[in-house]
Image 1 (cartoon, rainbow, N blue to C red):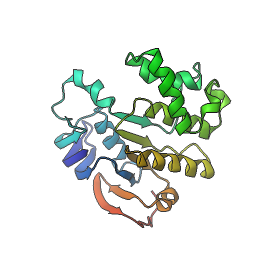
Image 2 (tube, rainbow, N blue to C red):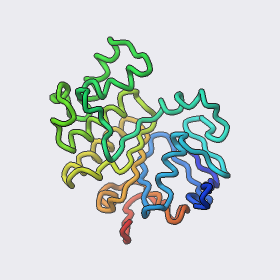
Image 3 (tube, rainbow, N blue to C red):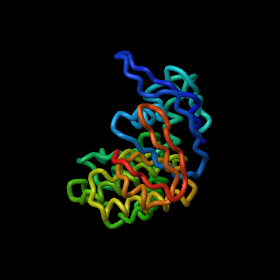
Length: 229
């Protein structure tokens, strides 16, 4: 579960990134977070990952109190989530298999588990046939699917996808979203931050809309976005 309770964030330069943001995301939900550039979306992601803390207000993520967390607890929080970025962030000198296995190796997972887990998640994202390829040998959509597999490999409770379709064509964008929907049906909470209103309108999911650091809309089902982000 994720809870933001009256969260404010003011940066030293005077920017008010969040102005009283409150919402709750239950385990297993699929939620879009949308809004214009500067609306506060990136600040919310940073706070979910404990890269930043609120000026005021309370945040709880998977049982972790973001305001009161000690530094040594941050890795445990981050292991409960997988993050997918617009620019993929794959390691060019590693194969797809090695990229996906990397988070497991960082936490000391045994080779036996890695040999079982990595092919499993590559199968989920339909990329088993590219396990030995390097990122430069993949299309943009394949690179994003590899990044999604890497985010999944630690069996996180939450997937955070930050503009996951920004660097792929519309057909592949729809495929990425369908994969995220399938992952959500397996019980994983999915949060998608996006500017792509057409994709949001295609999928019948909850949408949290931000404007000037405030939640101006929080609706589920048949939501149509009338303005460009």
